[in-house]
Image (cartoon, rainbow, N blue to C red; front, side, top):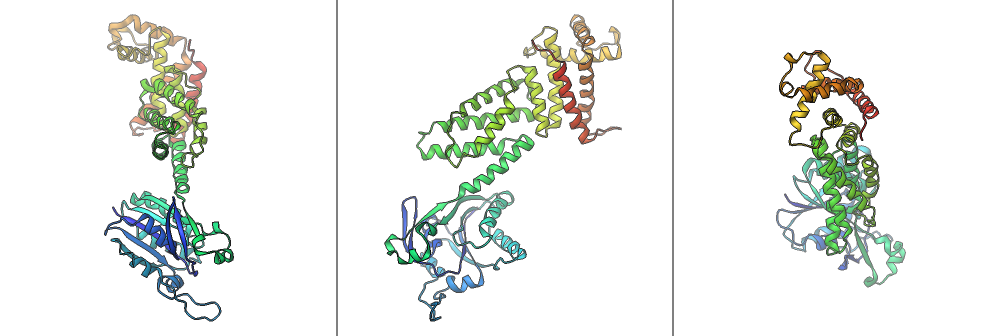
Length: 445
């Protein structure tokens, strides 16, 4: 793992000025790269590097000394190039100049992508200065950063831009006294974080995996807490939300049916608390619309193990967790049957016997098995078994759903290794039908 500073050098005859970042000022420099490096990289080690990308003209004009020419006479001007300015710093890191094409065609843009990406190593920490990036390079920089995050586990430490235009147009700046030419450097990392939010939210809405969203929410909240010395208490609300969203979604993906009502209630409480948070910070602004979406999805949960379980099956279907949806819906039906004969579906100490008998009673009724063909524990609990049988006789629609769920759940659990495996789309369509049928036929008092 190393640190790498990436920047593109332009061709213009840059004016001397001072650059300011968070009240730290680097005075009297022509190149923003020098200022940014002095601000952010001075403590880097020998394993770290500065990578400056230049076109042929940028190399001639600004990398080497005296490359600029007087517009009137055509004579070379006395200008120290960036190569000399950086070498004079005598820092420990290495300095590398890399040639790139002009980027005038799609082919050249892809070539630039490959060259820049090739300078990023595994687990590198990246600082990107895009001040003098030309044409499509700023957009390309963001793409490269995110590609490197995925392919090389790289991280972005900063995305910087020296906003010369904040001082006015070039003719106005040329007339300014040098001490007044103070150019602000902006960290645009939040825009890259917006892309991370976009990817994380898409991942969550598509698959129900909240890991990325939870990490981003907690990371942004902790950053704000650190910056405010813990005074922004609303960020702790966001951290709690992030934690419980991850817990809730993991309970669904791992079919932890017993935990669903409790986890759902905690998450709903977090969402209610988040309504009081003012999302003014760029770091967590993207969270607000996501909270609204999640809040709508959580509204039907009401601390009832049966209705919450049915809603969980619907959630699973909507987030492409089809296998979990089948498992949860069938097991919740058993909880419902236990409830309907007057037993407590939350009595986890004794429920294994009751749930087994509930399942056996379906087979007994469907196959009209005499008592001598019953299995344990139904044989030792005939009274309880007949309670289930009597219930099922008046709930034929639910029993049909339960048996269909059993068949398809078995198909899924055995990876479709049977004579007539269900098609993927059929599994989705049938699960929706079964959810609707269960909702229509249950009666919770």
